[in-house]
Length: 263
Image (cartoon, rainbow, N blue to C red):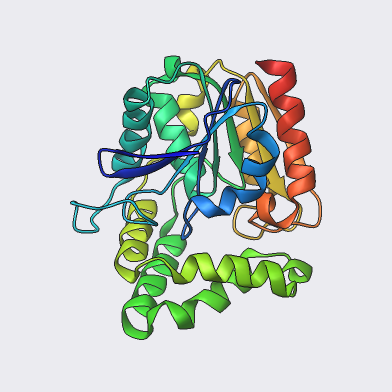
């Protein structure tokens, strides 16, 4: 595995001999959330992960003032820096928002798009208010008070009670700064709708969602599928909003089947 800086973004290139599979992590994590996928796919694909601006080892000259356009531009810069071709790109939740904007802005760089536990609509007023409260709690009480409640809502109850998985996820969250978490929350609150752009996307798309996802319930994935002409939808059992971590076996199986049959 090779580690490189693409501008300010810390990239992990597992240098497999197959086609490129680029993973974009969710909020508020880093590249480690894809460990189960790295281990599964790196023997057959050139797997690449990275830390989103301000998270993990990636640096930040934006003073934690981010937009979804900044994050998606970082993805396109990674592709240019590593001279990648025909990228298969997978994003979870906020990573899915970033992936959508990157593909919309430069569809020709991608062979396929995988959206997990994500949606195409921007936040409504109620969701913006919830994000404002989350930011306020982070500023006033720190991430420790927010992390457990956040994880309880993110995960299927049986997975939340899995002590090993709980510790793995919480350790990743604990490594992120409050400032980066606030900046990314604002970026999500001000993101645009992408669903009206889907008519121009012709590459194969796989949509996956946990059967107990309360953050982005099934109907959001169903609407994306209805607008993406070359798409399929899979439901991950016994999973909340973090399907690649909560049920990696099923997630990896669906993704592997998709990649083998479409690229």
